[in-house]
Length: 136
Image: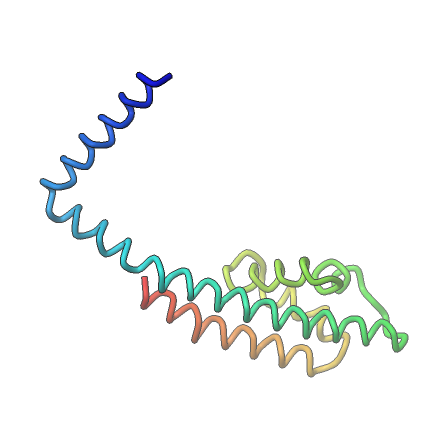
């Protein structure tokens, strides 16, 4: 077991020596490592925005349900609890699901949730993801 670990260590050292000789590769690895921290913070910002909007959408859905509003299966599937809502919001900005597919159930609760959803898409797509692209 110890011999296997030593062998792996020598392989890593050999790879490190090769990287030292390839200047362009070393520069790219250095740049990648230097963008790790800003990339992490941009990801945290994206998660916080998704979390805040998910709380708003779940709250609006629960208020709609408590006032006797009809809850469609699509509304329940995407907007009924916080984890599902966060997942739906993430899918909406990463092209995992169509925006219209998520906005139609919101439209049954009135125009305000649809406008909030449009604001979410605008904020995340045009601001956060462009910053993320610029950082990385």
